[in-house]
Image (tube, rainbow, N blue to C red; front, top):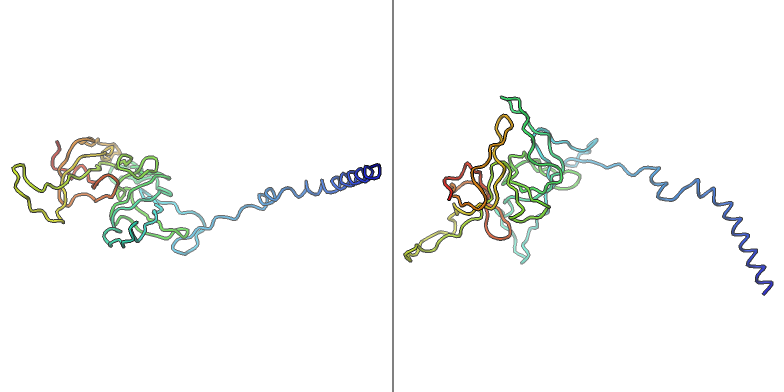
Length: 250
């Protein structure tokens, strides 16, 4: 036992001496994380359509750079989507938005209606598609954005139309009259009426003032056959139309 105690004491003293030698060295080197921080993290590499950029893109005027959501080529059942289905409005997140545009007649600045981080719904065929940093993006003016989704949730009740737009839940086509006479309706007959689910804040004038929409959520509207854009959202068939495209309300 005495010999073992002496050995333990010698090992302990050797360990203390080694710590005294290596301690200053470890302090001067620092931790791997600290050393990496001193060297600096790799700089972000920016590219546009496979061309290198010196820095990030900055949209001008009322343009917004939107990173598009991934669109699958097939449905959950394995069916291929038709071309017209893939051309419907799409969702994306605003990466950066321009400061707005100056009206040429009044000189008033009309601010861009969206901001960075907004989840937006794009209109059909709006904007210019680009490859930015290896991902699919789209440049689009705020006039080509139908609205935003609160909380980043794609639902009808979270949709906020921009400007003077309305989100309308389309009414189902009637198959017979009130007296029981069958109606002949084609499958391609577009619905032209429905209930307003959400209304935008209003149209912006050349002076930068907002003119409120004269139509409220809960009212029903009639609009032109070719007005607006079809929108695919849970809970029915919808269309986003301008209030100025409406013919009547009740």
